[in-house]
Image (tube, rainbow, N blue to C red; front, side, top):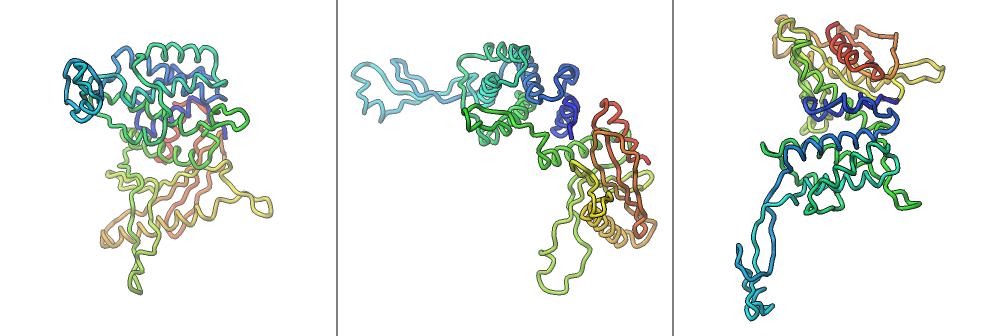
Length: 358
């Protein structure tokens, strides 16, 4: 499933809650088949913005030998190295510097991308200029996962968050070519597991952000307790966690929707006779969600006018699917819905809103 590059950018921006910082027009003309150009273009644009407003600085510890006392004197090192005889001392002090971890990650990621053979020439030139404009005092490092875990953002450096997410994505998808030792970017959009989580996060945050368009309160990944009676000691702890992707409730109409996102290269599976079928696991899972939440609401409302849940299984496609199967399962409506990701973003936006209005 090849989703256009610009739409991948929207997916990421929603999933990271960074839609307000996205600049879709600036990346709209990039080759749809080369995602590394997308990330490089974003980094170039955001780095230029960062340079214009001023790079973040932080205090770093400096260990220095000199004739002037600064900060704390390291007495043992001063005596062991016989520095007093030459009129010097060993001192440790804090200095405000651009050489902090987030700047090191940025500079190192730019350097890595510049070594890629997959970049378009104009984007490579933009990256090169950004790299040269970064202060020489910033060290290049071998970026690791723990560097990102150590980052802390606050009011004065929050604008680094989006940049660091792009850098982390680049780092996570760089593989070493064993034939020549060069780093090659692995297109994560071909990884079904990664795209499944991305699509799920996108849909959840899309509906949260656009509440005014659809009118639902949205809860994502909320754990729901089983309505069950244990028949032996400690039985409940063996039940698997029930955690629907998205639960939507309209407080005015009391309409309730359980929306579960799925991401497969092919939504329907062919049986032994060549007939297209919905995954049985998807159907069983959604039916369990609907029945359990029905029993929970039945208990809490004491049978006074509660609304049953409607289930929606949402699949991304790259074409318009004319089939929209739906069923009544024990009083619950269950529908299969598709969202065509190979269209203009405004159309995707409108289709997702209409999808929950029906």
